Every structure is written in structure tokens, then in C-alpha cells.
Length: 292
Image 1 (spheres, rainbow, N blue to C red):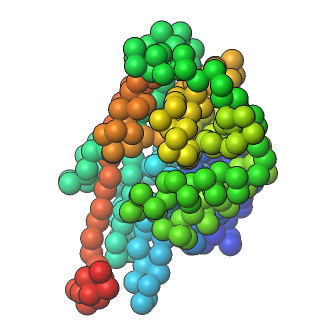
Image 2 (cartoon, rainbow, N blue to C red; image 1 turned 120 degrees about the vertical axis):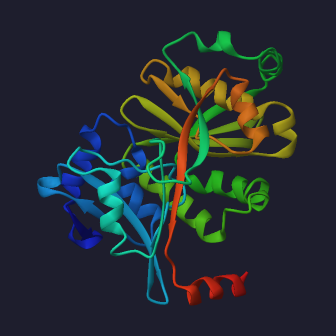
């Protein structure tokens, strides 16, 4: 394996390997990584038979591999090296390593996380909670339409969501809009808006892989949220996608109320793990603490 800089990666071969992999990981397409990463390189074997993206930061000469915003996890696509081999190699290039993956116990200290998903091939509406069914009966006044302009959702997101999430920065919001634009350009995403009369009250962006739909981000006004606009959005999206896709991925959340919302649609939990290797210099750690 070798570490290849972004400028030297054959994007056609890279995306072909991502597309052909049994693992559906839309987060690893080159256009996706370009949208959400300031810098990224990759571990690659001959002829791109095995690949792993390596997003990174470089501050004061210290390089750290990171889990890029709006990506849940990275997978090694191919079987020519393991995570242990990859991490040994990466440790010679990066003082800090942070990544997420579904494999348990790659290294000690992995923190369990979870996301929610639903089988679209089943009669999923039967699995809705009583509360969800009751709310959906009151959403007849809403209508949903496809939108091609991401700024519509970004404006809603800034006004009603972004300020509530400590982990999302202004730069992340810029990356989010760029990501949606790239996804629309590559025909791998759709943006749906919910209206009450002529008023835009909610919206959501959905990423489309081979057989998986992933809910990226959404937002709604406070009044429409109470009236069930997000229930309407999710229900209508799943009904739209069930004929073509097998899995609806809610994107997941560690926030109990958000995960609980997904569970009301009968969503199941899937575990993945958050890993960190910290070999940062003492002086660098001290500077980080002083800046907080």
C-alpha cells in the first residue's frame, strides 16, 4: 500500500472501486470527499484494488487524520490490507488519527455509536408507532415538492437548526451546501421541500447510492415541526423511494430525542465505533487547551 495525495489519485479508478464494492458507502466517492474535506489523501494498493480515504488537517506542522464532517464512517474497500496494517502505516505519517467504522475492537477504546435504518422492502408503515400514525393523519394540508436549489434548505437550516448543534460550525454549513450541490450535479441526491399553502416550512436532502437512501440533513420551522412536517417529509420520502431502493438510512443520532423520532417509524439501530489514536506532541495539546 502507499499513501497517495489527492492530486495524484486517478479519480475514475477510485470511484469505480467505490461503486463496485459490496459495501455501500457514498461517503467515499471522490466528489463527496472533495466537498467535505479541506485535504484528503488515500491508502491505495496496485491498480486501486484496495482503497481507504484519509482526510486530514495540518496545523503548525502537525498532521492529523480526521473523520470529515457529514461522513459517518470509512471502510477499507478491498482485502489487500487490514485496519491494523493501515493504522501501523498511517502512524508513520499522522500524529493523531480519528476514524469511525462498523468493525468492533479494531483498537482498544473504541466508543460505540449508532445510527438508525429501515427496510424499505417490508411493509414499513405497519411498523410506525401509534403516535406517528396519529400525527400523520393530521398532515394532509402539507405538500412535498422537489427542489433543485440547496440554498432553500440551507436558509431553513441556518435559521432553525444550526445554532442548536455545537458540533456544526459556519464552515461546516458552507461544506454542507457544497456537498448538496455536488450531489445534485452527480445525480446522487434529491432535495425535497414541504409547503403549507405557499409557505416553505420544511425540507430534507437525501443521498442516493445503489440500493440505499441516506437522509443527510433537514430542517423545519418550529410551528410546522409541532404540526408534524418532519413526520410528513420522512413518510413521503420513504414511500417515494421504496420502489427503487432497499434501505432507508436515517443518518443516525446520539441525541435521544432525534433517535426516538426515527424509532417511531420502526427504525432499527446499527452499531459502529469511534476510534482515536492520540500521539500528538505535548506542546500541541497544550496550545489546543489554551485556545478553548
